Image 1 (cartoon, rainbow, N blue to C red):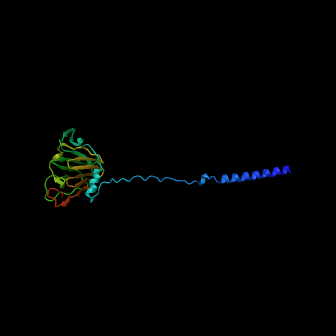
Image 2: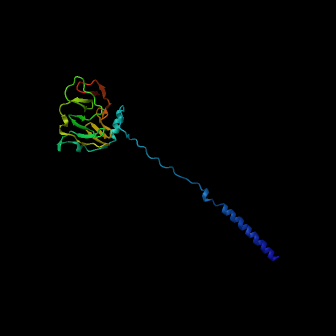
Image 3: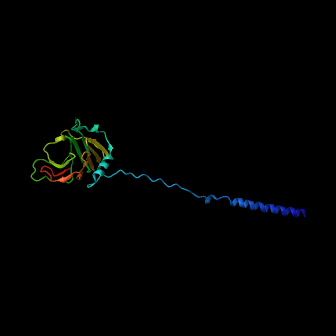
Length: 227
């Protein structure tokens, strides 16, 4: 009897131990069922700066914004002109050379008397005006802020007598007086802040912006614009 009682007591204790152990085991959450949280990837900021040069018909505000986004360069290096190994100081005037958008071609610009005069090679130059006499230079451009002319009858080098200025690299801008120019691989853009007018000079043509409207050209030029 005593042995039977001991066996019955041992069986009861073992049953209770299995029951308690099972409940404890089932109360532990499985690692596979734990919720997984992830943080969303940060959204990169979107640049608001225009990248492509303004096309024909762009507003003057877009042109000013694009030119202003260029990296300013020190004007001190552009008060000289170079020709045949000779360096000529220009005083307060500015001379520089910029890409024209065509291979092996560039645009030369220089200031004189407050006007910006540039000389470029046009892929489709305008014809000589009717009844015009003398040496015709279709890529001779003068920009005063209130006026723009394309083509000129020139028998002399004018302000380019002393040669050309230093290179204005693409993406950089140069400020002088009321004007600011920015070089680009496709051409050169210049703005006159005082009159909110601008011009694009490239081998594929000359484009006017802002208040500049085309007028009947005088006999000595192929195209003219005025504010």
